[in-house]
Image (cartoon, rainbow over all chains, first blue to last red; front, top):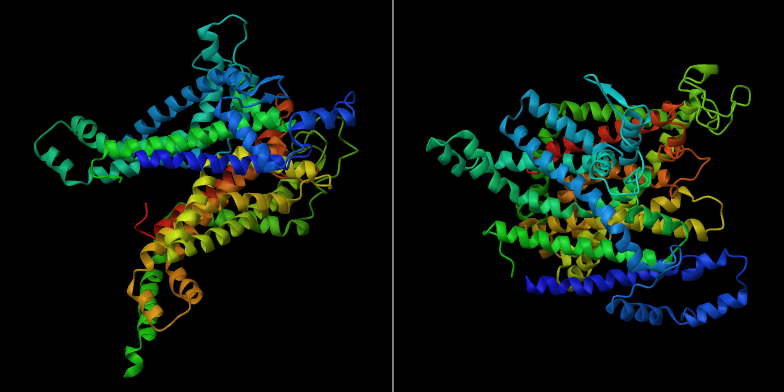
Length: 319
Length: 308
């Protein structure tokens, strides 16, 4: 396990080399935002690129970037006029709030739906859940977002005598912090972001649970005369969730991608929107910082999935 | 009798028998999955409409209805526009049909590229093992650790800005998606090759002096093809979603060329007065992707009953 953690370091270095090389081909390089400014002359550009070391060979620039990152300095974001770490850390709480809410919904409902479908296989209920999961996995996130806005935000919807109209943009409508207001704002984007994962988790839980239900120890538990709910939860669920834990950890890249789309549509002031804005202006340092951060998270969660798997299932051994 | 004991004949007989048993139940198992059959029919219809789009006597997808359009989308049914027009007065039905052409072509070519690269590299890694395998697998680690959508966005944005042409060509998007998505296929193929290369028929083929290339492509690959087909089908669904997401965000297929994704890009601003502009393109994506996913599910049940 220690060896696997150590392998993550060269992997991240390799990732950074590839991303650095790709971004370096962006027109104008890191100075792209200045090229559009009419007040900056050619001489200024040359002076800037000399001062910033941009006239050096790419590998030298990369080593410079790497040694700075080692001290926690990801550079200066030209599109936000602040340090990359500040820009990202400022937006992180909003993104974590959105992702956390969406993931909680997805895990809770996904596992619940999966269990229900597996306990009553090939019934109408199972059929409804499985079809819903297929729809969820086939749904383009951005269109689902538009449809949710159309249904709940544009005109609002009236059901059971209540009129529901939810905000379709932003994280709050007042300057002061108000928990109820925040919750109202997070409902639509979180539902949109959670759908794909809810569907994936419910399909995984269902197939894993179906396998577990057929095992001998489940039959033994039933033969002992234990209560059915108790068997499903205590004996079944514990074992069925082992592969689900892995898929939850491996869903992170998808969550990052989904957050980019969701934040753009719902004008959510998070890291995904920061990234899209930076992309329009080729903000080199910010793009580099963002891509490295999400790659790091993916590598970290892959490792976590392995650790969790080995810990939960004693039959699995890593050298 | 010498011929009957020839390892080559034996190996071929074994392959043949396997293949026949495999093939026997495939159609029956596929037909049992009724939604997969429906999916196949839907895909067939969408493809036919896309292929024969020029023969359908549709309006020009890029032409503005100068006579009726007054600055806002025309409602379905008005002035001969069956599904109405978009915010620029262009016929929605024609744009949907020609958008289908683009979206399906991107998906098919990107997946073909992905499968080719993934199969060749996966086969090499699995067959040779050792340091070749190690190097290739670390490469897949790298690709699989960078979240796909941000990387795709960065690459398309860079190509769009550096290319001299005004619009991102469709080929560029195909190549970028193909280059970034092969590692999952490579891992799949590698896994089957790792077990296949230990089988007797492979040993037999090697014993009679078969060249590596021939063993890989003639003997091993046909036995590893089922999971590749299943993965390829599911990947078509993924790529349709990916391309439409890119185009929606403005980094994919560029207007005026219609794609299901970029048709939705401006739909949000008119949603109160013209919901149809937002509804139809997304419905096309959903139905097509759903059909492909069901087809993939049915193929998995039919081709490889061991898989879940």
